[in-house]
Image (cartoon, rainbow, N blue to C red; front, side, top):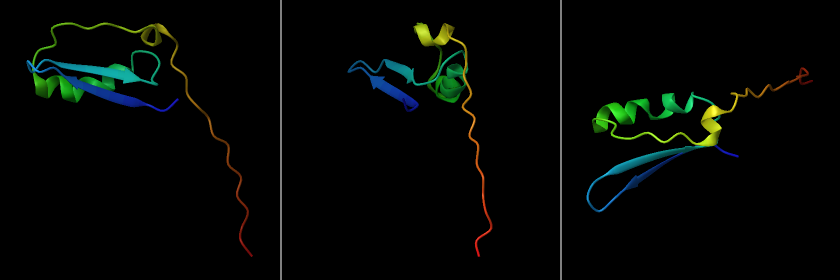
Length: 67
């Protein structure tokens, strides 16, 4: 699953942010700057992924010198 930040804006101007693809509380880091620039947070709903353990993907690379 890819990481996404989805922004919904209602006709009345209410903004809702939704984060998909990020597990654990690090999703708050993704929304922090927008939240600060938009004003006061009036409600926060945490999805089940918020309470899940954060996972890190490890990538192993091996390189050979080109000849």
